Length: 366
Image (tube, rainbow, N blue to C red; front, side, top):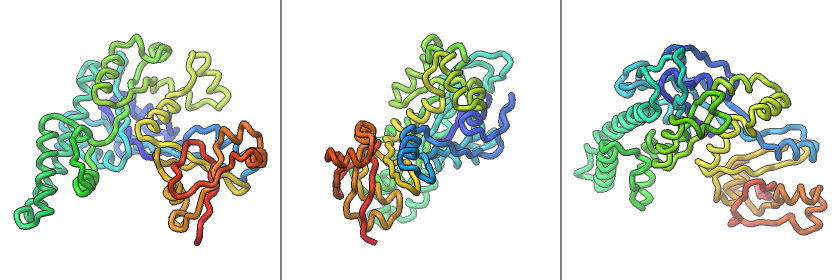
């Protein structure tokens, strides 16, 4: 999974990125301190991987990972080359979802590119730049398809779709809200355009440490972001990027104690990962043994052969069956043998839909 961190300059993007990845992206109190998109990979916290590694004495332990891309601060006119221009918009096209960092804190010592803190205005500034960038993509495609649209029926059909999407965006609406026709060809075309405003968004409301204690409930700025996101059907998590940077420097035991002292149950990274999995409809299944224990990320609703294909394409092609044991059943029984004795180890076929926490051994022909 790849998430792109975007937002206006000086809203806390690079500070949040540093805390999430410990990658050390430069963070400074001036616009455009991030010149190239910074990329960092973080592991997905999953206690199940640790427990299974110890239980099966695995030589290797491999958790699921998330890749974060920190994209330079966008400004009004970015799609037309303002600020550092649309070179960064191209970076966003490669991500699965967008983490939009919104400044919800007042601090006279941190300049705001527009002179004041107004989260809804800031969100709209970025959103419009993404729409303009999408329109540019559509116009290029329209010009290409239009050359043969009158002579070719398929090209004519795509041209009609392109113009409908273009009109939708010109009305100030996101591509995510466009009613894609229930047609395989149209759906494939729409997905192929890879429009920025079609991507799901998680808003990171960046607050002060004091406002974090009640999850931003007392912040007028956070309330506005939550209302905006609700109308879009997107999610919000409240974070203090500055505090997360401090937490990132601590050892695991110190981190837990620090969070407890603040009255918090989880870090901003934990909240973001949960929100990302929910937004993208993701789950993890597990494989374990003496060689390695590993978490694999898949979409909810994935069937056993396709889950096997995540490990290796040969597994999907030659799939015979899956030996499945739920993590919770294993914990309840204490050992693999005890779970098998109770009949909790199941043999599942090609139509089995993999569940979160399934421990699976795939059988296949080579």
